[in-house]
Image (cartoon, rainbow, N blue to C red; front, side, top):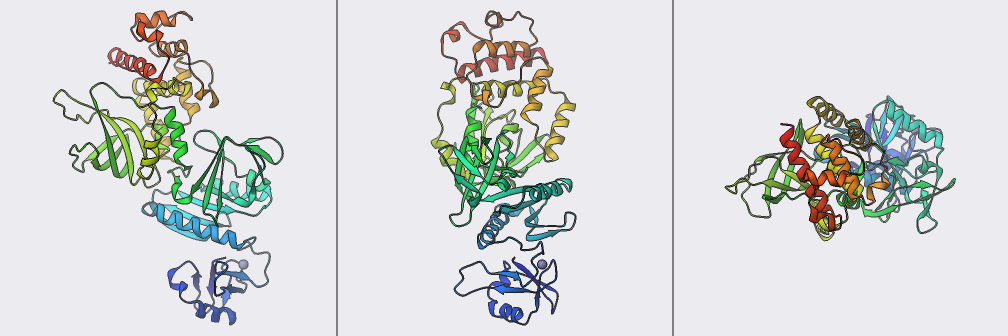
Length: 480
Ligand SMILES: [Zn+2]
């Protein structure tokens, strides 16, 4: 434990505070005179602070083994906790109202490793779990946080996961309890090694037997390359690239693409408002407020605090070659720190085969821009602002509701190639065209949503986007 109370003046001593870092001898003196007590059970604690330091300076109970404070802690636990604390404190400084280490929460009667009160009213706790405590105890702690509307982020020690094959990992039972579903719907787990400072995010975990799981992906990252969004979900550049694969850039005729560097971004109904600073094309951009509607799947990649983002956006040009500022289409939203690795990974999405996920995203976009009523949009936004996300399932249900799709599509099938018939059928249904199954190509040719020459080319995202643009302008005309 890193905190104790000095009985002389009731002062809380937090060893992380600057003022104590130079005061080892006075602390030693208090400790020897038995002036230091545990903030929780009020029994005596001793200072452990050797020179040279081998372990993180800490306090330890002299006798009370039943106290919830400081139980089951190791030097690795203390080290990890301090590194994680400093990461949250510095990375999200602008959003944090209060951050505390080893914080007692009266409502749950728990001591959280790290407790964060955000300016937007959310409360988060970060728990660094290295000991294999009972699954019941973990469930109980999680339930208490949930009941009290505290977002709990669990990070497990590297000691709880063992590599036992190329795609298999043996995971301790306590860590199994901490597997969570991330924003892409994948079962995930975060681990942290306080010595190497590597964070590992395991994605797509699937249980094989009592201890063994298969994994889809395992990302080793430096802690500073991990971000948390405002829902308290971790994300890394590979998550972004995966989503990006399903979300080709849409370049309309007569548009200008800009990289907008954003200093700050506030979410306000119904747009995000950004203060922008510069762009690489040298067009003048006078620190003006810009308004963006950020596609939901990209919102996941806006770090809490939203500082220092790159937004790649297409603007429609009017005939005088002036930016109209209307309907900018967002192609990219990501922390500017990633700019180099994302550019290195840019393949031409137009030439890639169209996948089911591409179609899904375009159908959702079409639905949202043409059919979503004000009430539905309001509802969606209020869900978002309460700190929840509108799930893929909910969006998919919108499509079901209007009869655009009739079977449920799983996460895995998003990556599968989609056939032209499937694309055309969905879009014809979106247009509310009556047609017989099996005649979608014929109908689509008649409505000019596909051109004869496109039937012979391989089905790429480029063609899918052409189809989307024609539907979009068709619906724009008929629904006005
Ligand atoms: Zn105690």
